[in-house]
Amino acid sequence: MSHHRESVTAMNAPAAIGPYSHAVRAGGLLFCSGQIPLDPVSGELVGDTPAEQTRRCLDNLAAVCEAAGTTLADAVRLTVYMTDLGAFAELNEAYAAYFQSEPPARVAIGVAALPKGAQVEIDAVVALSG
Image (cartoon, rainbow, N blue to C red; front, side, top):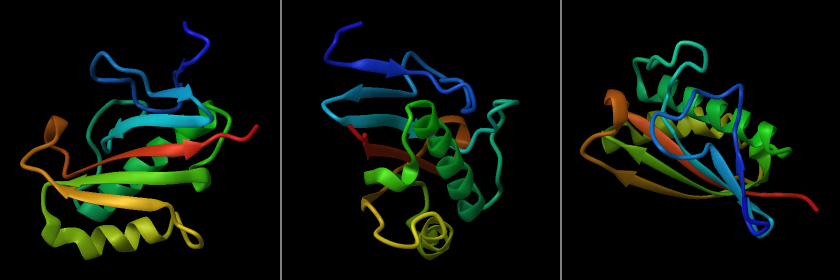
């Protein structure tokens, strides 16, 4: 482990489905890997709609943030990947419930496919205190 970066493993988030860390701390920021809507216990995809999947992705990111000693409310930027940009309004409604004031910067990208057939994946960059 380098003193310039530290990997974070979140016990309450789904296990990584590849060779990556849940997140990496570096330079006062937490760089969270993308979360798809997996149940943290079963590892199975959950949610039939983009809104349901968005909520699960954000819950998973919140668990990663908690493991690193911060919260999703301290996010500075999220990237949302969607297989159907036609569901953007539905996603926004679910997303808004997590960021009711001072939401982070955000990018939304339409993609052809996501791991395990997910409709939504979200990653985050989060500010760390002190």
